[in-house]
Image 1 (tube, rainbow, N blue to C red):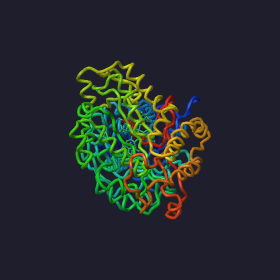
Image 2 (image 1 turned 90 degrees about the vertical axis):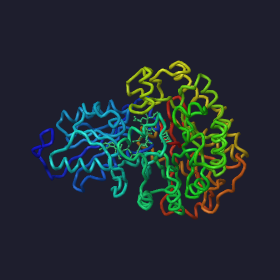
Image 3 (image 1 turned 180 degrees about the horizontal axis):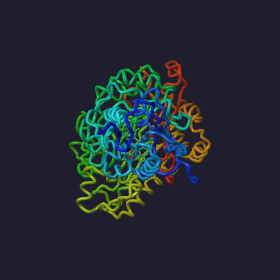
Image 4 (image 1 turned 135 degrees about the horizontal axis):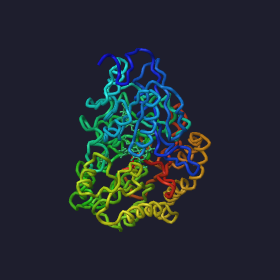
Length: 549
Ligand code: B12
Ligand code: SF4
């Protein structure tokens, strides 16, 4: 190296002009429909990386999910985050800026899985989380000798600068207060992106609780959304976080596991600190499928009592039902995620699954078609068996069958997937699920939330077009607040375990205790939950988690 980067630039200490881009699966200016799903969360990964830049560097962050990209600028450095479904557009923008002479960096989940593919469009490719590689690259770049490939190995969130939330256009998002306080997950399910992404270092680690609380403290309004894969992955960490959160007057949503829910005491702490809805990857009701995907933690394990039932009987339903009862008893809404197309599924799986979710009074469900993300054990297995039928990454959106299923045709899998959404969110189903709860108030709450959101779909479309998504936050919060009065979620007001159907459940954010709630309210104004709709055909579900597989 002669002090020049591979594209001929000499070492320089001058401020950098940096452009950060989160490309969307499709352009955000569709004339047909704008899904609220894409206006929920800001690009937190890029905002995190921006935190490592110098104070005098000039940074622009554009998120194609919510705005039309300005491609006419002349940055020195372009930073693009690519997911599998946005890879095609990410490469297009990378090529565009390279042709203009900018230095282009590609990172995120897809370049991590397929660095050689990404390298055709980038000057530097990054594998894994960026907290170690990104500052190393910046030093190399400023010194004039950046490397073509950086692979993260040092996994820690200690000393991480604060994400540059000032770069986020808050008014364009319904849930600007998203955050992650851990990375990864202690489990290893075959279909999950996680093992591929974290290869080369630890695959589960947490932030210092005081750092997490400090970040929370600086977020305005009340509502928080933890995007962590599994917030309860470390019970001591989760318990300490909840202890710290208690009394901060926050309302929050997150993802957890059946195991985490069944752990004695932890859920109660979470509810006391403001948990209002939990995304849970039930994935399948079939124990053979769970074992094949190495998701045996859903069959029992760490938790006592009810967990043992599932382990003994082999079927997960008893355990799932116990977890749902526990959540509902504490006033927590359940967003259940299922994956269709595992080898033990046949074409009866769709109706059976929907029927079961309705019988449990589950408020929202997200359904997915099994998708072999590159680099996962699932992908390796299906590829070895010659069953992968498409490498068109645009189709890897969990709505398309990109492999040959074992127990049905690909067409049956796709049509069954759409039918599941239709059947879960049809009015008769909403009524049925609502009446699975115990009393009139529960019925009304379920109907109001699930049905109400369903009716709001056209409104979201208009709000997004008008750039007014955030204006709906106070309204939503008020609605959710009203319905929260019966829940047992305020500090000191935890409801005792009751019969399954007694507790209220709601659209994700529900204050618990009306008046008492107002008393514990922080100075910041209140916010609301994040409704989303997974697709055009399905109706708008309640606030739920974006994790899609
Ligand atoms: C929020 C979210 C969304 C939001 C996106 C919001 C946004 N603007 O980013 C929405 C709801 C739109 C969404 C949609 C979808 N999602 Co999504 N989503 C997530 C979720 C839960 C959190 C992402 C996040 O913010 N993470 C926290 C930040 C800090 O981490 P990060 O973004 O990964 O960034 C770090 C590193 O990746 C790295 N990095 C990233 N870019 C770069 C660039 C450079 C240069 C460098 C150095 C480093 C670097 O450094 C960052 C800091 O460590 C993840 C799960 C997860 N835990 O990550 C799934 C996830 C990313 N989604 C996934 C999927 C499949 C989808 C959908 C296809 C699902 C569907 N059925 O529709 C759609 C398609 C989206 C699209 N546009 O293509 C998969 C991706 C699989 C894959 N291999 O790409 C994930 C991993 C879920 C899962 N468990 O499988 N999603
Ligand atoms: S699917 Fe969920 S539980 Fe399994 S490894 Fe991934 S994040 Fe963890």
